[in-house]
Image 1 (cartoon, one colour):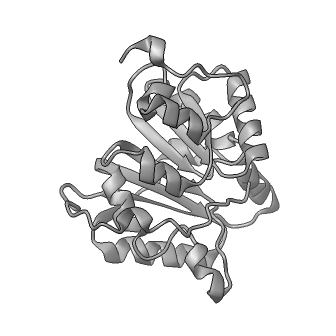
Image 2: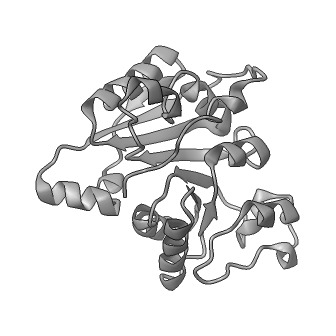
Length: 227
C-alpha cells in the first residue's frame, strides 16, 4: 500500500462514507496494515480509548450513526494521539455492504445495543435471526464476538442466537476487557446495576456458505447504543 494514499486522520473529524468511496479501500484509512477489530455503536469512544492503547499493534474501527457523538469520539481519540483507531459516521449496514471484506475482522465488539423491547420494534435489533451467520462471514477463523448489555432478557436472546447457531463456542471474557468500560457502563457500575457480558469464538471452518441475503440481515437493525 502506498502510504501517500492513506487517508490523513483529521483531528476530531470522523470519516464519512463518501471519504471511503473516494479511497475505495478500507485499509487506507490506517497508516499501516494490522489485524482489524470493529466496535459497532462506539458512542463517545471510551472503550476504544482504553482498549486500543493496550494494543498498538491492532487497528480499531468504531462505527457510530449519530454524527454529534461520532465527532466527540473522533476528537477524544485524536487528542489521545492514538494512530490505530478510526471513527466512521454512518450505519453499520452500509459499511458491511460496501467496505468490509469477508473474513477481515479479528474481533467484533458490541456494548449496550438498544434492546428495542417492544415486539413491533424487534426487527430493529442488531441481534436477531441471521446475526451470528453474518458475523461469522465477517470474522477471520477463530475470530471473537464480545457483547455487553444491562437488559437480562436481551442477554438471554443474544446467547440463544449464538448458542443455537453452532458456529461458535462460548469462551471466557478476557480480563483486560473487563477493565475497559464505556461511559454508560461506568455509570451502571457506580449505581451497582448488573452488567451481562459474554464472548464467543468462531469455530474453525464453521461457516463457508454465503447466502445472497446475509449482507441484508442488518439492513433494518438500529445500531444505536446507550453511552
